[in-house]
Length: 220
Image (cartoon, rainbow, N blue to C red; front, side):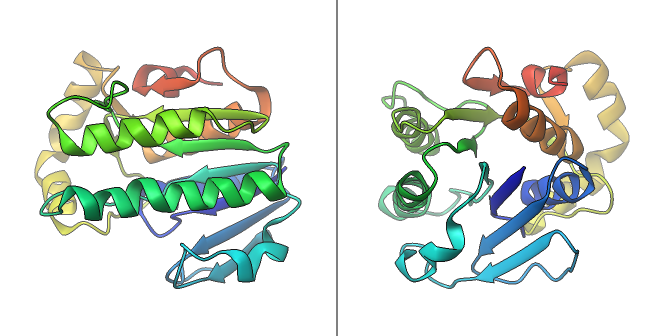
């Protein structure tokens, strides 16, 4: 299996990349992002591309792939809806449209979040925008399209978030995670589980197109 990964420098993307490189069924991983990921591996190729809204110049490098794991995302804190929409919706549509043209038989997996608003009409700005993005992606005629909606994500294997407050929060609450996972298993997952679940869904499919934390933990 050959995989394109967007967002490999983020916390989720780091975990997904780790599992892809460890999986014997994965032949090649292409990481595409604005900044370098800072690691090397025989399976890994990297394209640093500052303007992801313009992919025409790298289209020849994006062909021949079986799956795209789209882990690119930002916090909406302090952002206007227009700015958040540009990063979350517009950018995703450019990537999905380009990959559909080049790899129609691809499986596209998008990392969204628990609480995403599929009606696009709720009070939460980020949830509306994520819902709009999900709905648009589900209309794309790829081989398959799946939405991952994890809740709280525990970073494993030394992985850290680029968001400072998340790292600080994790450091403080880390001792409580075993209890939280025991009593609220459907709301908590790990970077390792997310990566393994993406690979399993890309290989074998899944009965529903929107996967919550409980689904992510159950995928084998």
